[in-house]
Length: 248
Ligand SMILES: [Zn+2]
Ligand SMILES: [Zn+2]
Image (cartoon, rainbow, N blue to C red; front, top):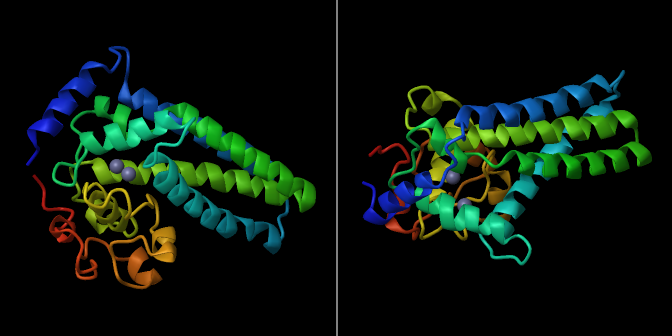
């Protein structure tokens, strides 16, 4: 059930979306930029060594920690200079989507599901700087692999987050990792725990590492939990143990 506050917020939020906004163009732009960056970087990789390829899992872990850090320390904390991110996430995304009503209705709601494309450009700029440093101190291939991984993880992030806020889960509930993050993130939308728990949006690795997950289980249990609520920590707010798929 959606509260009156949430319904009123949705109406007001939708009213201020520019008439020219198209959700599918927004998403297409993200995947065009991300896909182009991935393709451009991949074309520069030639005869990689095993050590070069090892950059991929290392960069995935780094991206996972970064995702956790950004969500926990910037998106949920009013940090001077980054207030726009806090306002957009804590004061808008979390009011538009609650644990009880976590689904979007139309593609116009993508405005508040997906990040603006400039966030991807900023992220790619950071990844490119890291890739350039890696290229200088190690190998060009390693640098390009880092950029590929960053672009891939960003698109992974956007896709998984969308999967959390889409209503129809007939297919999603059977997809490993997707079903895990869907329960994990919808639980995060519980206002009682949103400031402290379930900060990952792709794979709950950093939440497991830092003990900020609502689950009490090991790493594999975290990654492959799916919709299971058996391992939800006792003492969490009651709403927390509700199945993510209860529907509305
Ligand atoms: Zn969300
Ligand atoms: Zn959040």
